[in-house]
Image (tube, rainbow, N blue to C red; front, side):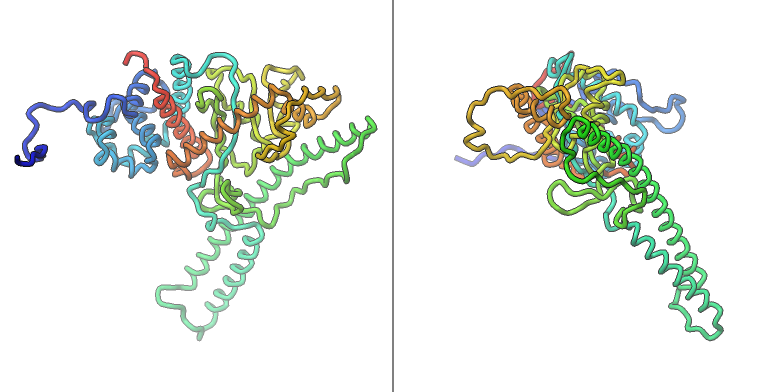
Length: 464
């Protein structure tokens, strides 16, 4: 019996036009994103309402294209443009149209309000689908370092900038002296003394600007540290009045002077040198913050910070959670977020009253290994005295049975989300530059994650 093969005919034209949606499976992510965005009433979109110029691509399609691309690990505008030709799901999404990379880049850069609105609308959609509950929610907050679109080698330290400025001054003097010598040795072909002097003067001006920026940052840092220093002195004085031990030498006051190793990056001046999350080395980065609801694993709040650590990030990150997401009942954070001032900002309002938000923060690093003593049942700890410090109050919270059970949710909530974003989506560095544009891109990443999460949960969109 002759062997039979499936007929592969690439030359005969199709007799009837195909339905693009049939080119991918009915439960494919691309269908879910298209249907979800079309179901959302979007108003904050920039379009040419005069009708002049070339035809515009529909905003819903452009937004769906960006979200699907970020959800599947395609981030650059040129790669997204290429996918409109190479990827079947993307051709389905764009209905076989092909926006170029400039159009994609401009749409992404100019529609910050649209992305912010879409982020909130997706959370409301999750509430409608019963994935995100209404009312009080518990969130786990954390930050992760994401590489900036700039190399740390394009940065200069405060001390090095001063040394280079001195060297440039000497070279300018040498070139000017050389120009006055009638029998001086000529420069290499293509080089002239006036051009070389101008180049060094421009370089010196750039270095001077860098030092001025570092000095301004140092002054801003001093203002913040001074408030913290005065608070620590006040706490020590209060302990002394109560007859308690002061705890060693008084803390040294901050200085407004820049540190020799304070750096400025010429490619992306708003990025910062930060310790990498995966090792002892340092990278040019931003601090991407996220607050994740513990039951749905959806990101309900997100922002980007320039701080190399999370000491000042608790209140701003919680403030980034929109009111539409619900009121915050409890927030779970690691020891990097804890400070008495940060907790009081969240737990007390201006009148000193306690709102409904309770912070559960580790105040010290603990080992993941549990000893035999840790496994033994223990009675509930005795509540701390009324004049106890916030650190003592927090230690008591995490020793109670309810506090332990609640805090366990932190590690299995927010850390896997960052793992999915960096490993599954492959988003490890920003493509845009500057904190405002980087914040816009992080919103897009979190929006893509949330829609992909809803798709993975298998929810049925309304009217589909």
